Each structure stands twice: as C-alpha cells, then as structure tokens.
Length: 116
Length: 115
Image (cartoon, rainbow over all chains, first blue to last red; front, side, top):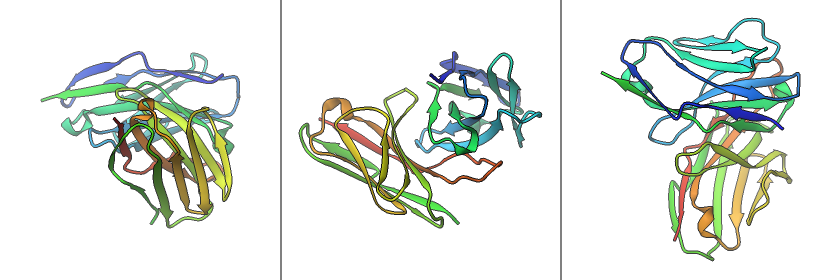
C-alpha cells in the first residue's frame, strides 16, 4: 500500500533563510508522481511543485525545489529565501500510476512558521 | 480559464440531518473530480473520485455518497449525518496531461460542523 510520511509537525525558519520540509514515501509502483501543496490559514490548497518518478532532474518552481532521492524514497521540499507569506501548512502527496493514476494520497502535513 | 466552485463555505447541521455539497468546474471538459475530507489538524483523506458522468469510485466506506449528474458537477451527499462527519471538505479536479502534471486544482472548501 502506498504511504506518505511527514515527520515534522511544525517548523520554524527565519525570514530570508532557506528551509527543508521532509517527506518520505513508500510504493511498489515504478511509475508515480510526487506533489507538494500549500494550505494557508484560509484553507485553500495550492499546488506548488511536481516530480515524476522517471524525471532525472529535481523539479524547481521559483523559490521551491524538490530534493528527489529515489533510492531513499524521499521528496523533500526546499523553500529558499523564506517570506512571511510562506507561513502555512505544507502537504506532500503521491499519486501512483504516474499521470494515469487517480488516487493521490496526502501526508499529515508540516506547519511552517516564518519569523520576522 | 478553469475555475472550480464549491459551496457552501460553512455549514452547521444537526446529527441525523441530510447533507448536500455541490462542486462545479468551469473551463474544462471531462475532468477527473475528487472529494477529500480533512479532519482538524490532519491531512487529506480521499473519499470519492470520478472519471466521468455517473462513474463514482469510493475509497472509504461510510455514510456518505457522491454523484456526478453532469460532466462538470460533483455532489457529496448524506442521508443522515453523524458527529464524525464534521470536517473540512474539499473538491478538486484534474486532467490527464500526458507527461506534464500540474496537480489538482482545489475548491475553496466547505467547513462542516455536525452538532
């Protein structure tokens, strides 16, 4: 069965510094996709970044990058130059079957606090 | 552009009452549609997904049901609510984009409190 683990319930980071949010996953499917979402206090879920299991390079989207270590089954999110607006819940997610799959499962989330 | 509408934003219902949450998508055809529930301070749990009109897959047995009467409409229902049905309900859509994948687009959510 597929599983997503986020071991950090909460993280603090100083404004303008980088922070890494951990995510490990477990699947037996060779084709899968990994995602990170941001959930501000308003409750909306915002897609941040995607990494395919066959992608050779780590995904990057602006200040977000995904540190994909396939052998370790980890997909950590790195946020560079943290901003106060980055304070939110962050969820790691995985979908088996690549883009043809339909079930995305989510981790328990990490709450990030950015300090001024 | 594609948009997703979900309503109501908040709902307080007594135990045993019925429920109907509606989600509609605009600007896309044949989307994959999903209902998720988020308990307070927890991650998201997939409840139902649909790949087409009338096609519903249930992930968790419970007293909730879903229907897709139209291509871009997804409805979550219950005949009799339980206290444990309280939570934040999110509707989402996605399309199959081949090699690219932009994740899900979520609605703004419905916060349901069963009293």
